[in-house]
Amino acid sequence: MHLSEALLREGVHAEARDFLAGYDPWKAEDEGWIGDDVIRELGERRLTGLFVGEEYGGAGLGYLEYVLVVTELSKVDPSVGISIAAHNSLGTNHIYKFGSPEQRERWVKPLASGQKIAAWALTEPGSGSDLASLRTKAVQDGDHYVVNGQKTWTTMAQHADWGFFLVRTDSDAKQQEGISFLLAPMDLPGIT
Image (tube, rainbow, N blue to C red; front, top):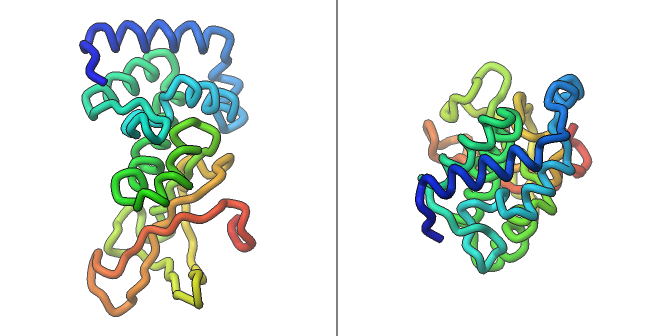
């Protein structure tokens, strides 16, 4: 989809302004979340799948359009803008870009539509966002992994359905080698 910059800016800003007219960002900030209903509504408008192709329920936009959408949403409410940015960039886009067709069908479609919300878990106590210092370990046990470690500042974790976890799968590897990206339901035992 190729839209002119002006038309995209104007349309997204007007839609965000109208949609969020009755929304109270200060109340949401006090409660610590913008509200699942807001994310789901933005999903119906295909803003939770900005990069995702139309065959998987997304808007099929490029990076320029993505920046414009996030900017215009943020002008109306920065918490909504950053939440949409995190869901698209840190959650949905990784599996859309690198996942198999089967994984895209299973995971990307619900994320692109806003039916499911994604969390991003990289930051750890003592390592911040330094990927090379990652300590959370995942050991394969049959057809699943056992994960041990701690994450902090997990973006969108409070209401996410699925978490994208960066974990060390090869403790002998140096730096960023041996790090994997695991997707897990946030209601698994042990995730708090």
